[in-house]
Length: 445
Image (cartoon, rainbow, N blue to C red; front, side, top):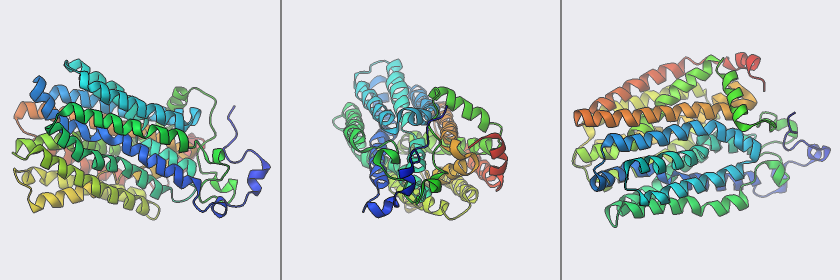
């Protein structure tokens, strides 16, 4: 039997004055701020593989394929953990799952300094950090937005998603500098410290729900106004809930359209650019610190682009936004092989700016479609869609490494990714406007 919906358990809640009138700053914004910092702390490793790959190769002689395999394991777990993490957050609370996830990221990063065999990097980079980052995946941003906000959900999802970009921006230049001197081990310890530093803030300030703070979700005037929020917490095993939601969602065509598009999204961001841009630039004679600086600029414009995408998602058709985002990304990847060189040219700056604006701008409209079509199951459905994102990223990371080892360059990988983006644009444009009506028959809210 389901638990009672948060914020509607008693009569007093229904007669409460709107929360925004009782608090100068609604508690939802405090929770969002702490969630943002948690995403920043968890994002440190996202910047690491591209920077640390060359130093590890130089010290241990491991191939690009071996290190790409470690990243692929990480990305697979990053994705597959997400839907179960969403269900665990519903069952045990956002705060506990987030704190454990940050601890896993810190442990995995710290233990990396002890590796001397290739299988050990698969354990630290792959297993431990993959489980931790998977529990702090973008589904975390969607869960916060759906639980704490009745309005401004698109904007909040965009801001929180930008936390990952901010983490990349904060850590990347330092990781690159430390990897050069004194070495990659100190860079790994910096990532561990960044993740662990946020844990006390999470334990103190990250409330599980508006009911814990004695308020309604931001923008809700009455409990009935927040009915589109998260589902009542089911008293079932989190894994069972996640699998049941997958079974229901898999009967809807829109789910598979989102899965296909987001798999390509992951392949062309985390999998390809995030993992292989710096090694590819290094192949063309560009210093690693310079290439890392370019990725940091991607992070800057990612923040702008994702927040803007959240704002647009609250106002325009999300499927149209997705189609535009994917097509622009494909054009950028198509010309990238022509832009790489030993020195940074103005054309490369243009690419970095455009790609940064488009990096994870796809998240707010994708999360919005999940919420619109699948209702109360939307958070867990987005977790499964995000799992596809990371499976695509893992496949691209491994395939691009194999292409580099086989041909000595990444050119074919860039061209293949550009073609996939066009496919994603077409798929997104064909998502039906009335898909939610079919879903309501199959997926109960």
